[in-house]
Amino acid sequence: MWRVTEATAAPYRPPASAPRELPRQRGRTALIVLFALIAVAGVVGGVVISLSAGDAEGAGLSIFYAMIPLPFLWFCFWWLDRYEPEPRRYKLAAFVWGGVVAVAIALALEVWAQSAFDLSDKATASFVAPLAEEPAKGLFLLLTFLRARRVIDGVLDGLIYAGIVGIGFAFVENIGYYASSYLGSPDIALAGAEGVTTTFVVRGVFSPFAHPLFTAAFGIAIGLAVGRRSKILRVLICTVGLALSMGLHGLWNGSLSYGEGVGFLLAYVVLAAVLVALAAYAIVVRASQVRVLERSLSYVADRGWIHPAEIPYLSRFGHRKAARRFARSNHGREAGRVVTRYQRLATEMAFLHDSLMSGRSKPQGVDRTYALLDAMYALRPELRFPPALPGTVRHS
Image (cartoon, rainbow, N blue to C red; front, top):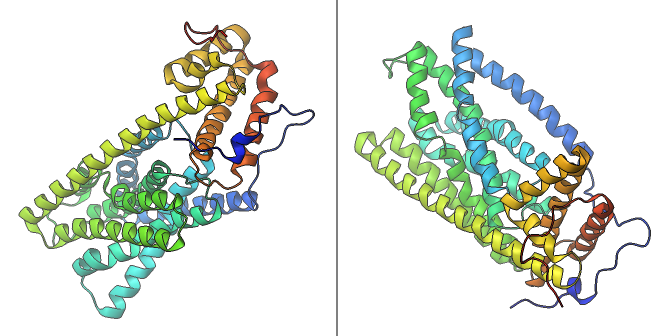
């Protein structure tokens, strides 16, 4: 049952003058510049790593094979993120963090540990790498949660950011693996283009979701921790999530180092089952967003904040797309952009309102709700929706 909160106690009143502005984060510009510089450094670093292959062919193949899975992986997380899209700057920052910052942190720790404790490559990969790489990747989610709780406000958000961080990490790591495969080693008979291709089949075809899967456990934990009031419980949930991430990573690396054929196959089957279960869970959570969105928009319409005929054009993807097409075709591109902007504002407002109605605490939740409504109201003079669908107009 929904609870009456401050956000629903007072009716919304359209702004008499200028609409309220949405709260902005402090230091936003500085962080954007910082991550842009880190991204440039990452591009340079990726090229340098690829050049370790020894010649132009090896460098080109290393980068080319590392890029092949990216569109597919990006599409998967874009699809999960369609209903309540996360800010682009945070998603790009997640990719940059995974590919540059997390790689740098993990590599430094692994080199230090291997030297300090005189570990073999297999021991380092199996035991040190999971302990170094997963906290390095998960640090982005933790810092994002601490800086802006409204960015990661649920399990799906945590899963999406964790996956993108993992994609970035795997991308840069794969460049190094492919360059090394091109050079060959005493333990591997193949080298050159054949060696790179063989490694690509293992990493890019059969296990492209490995790093996103490992980090997903911590991402889910962050998403679960958001809704808990107890700090002790938050810390406990995040600790368990990080332990699971390191455990999955250790299982995979250990099977490659010590498992031989049977051990690797068993580990692969276990992780594949975990991946399937995670994908099914993500799909169920995403599907539930449709019901939440329609429920919240219906309640908002009952309060008179939007017209009931707008609900289909704000909730279902097919109708949302049709509304944008109608506006562009009949009223020009600017009208299409207005509809797109209105839909995004309404979606954010509806999810935020539902959270407040359910009694979940949201940073500046009431102010943000009214600011979003103000922004929607400011667009109304230019809003051009299609005619109302049958059954969406209520008669008193």
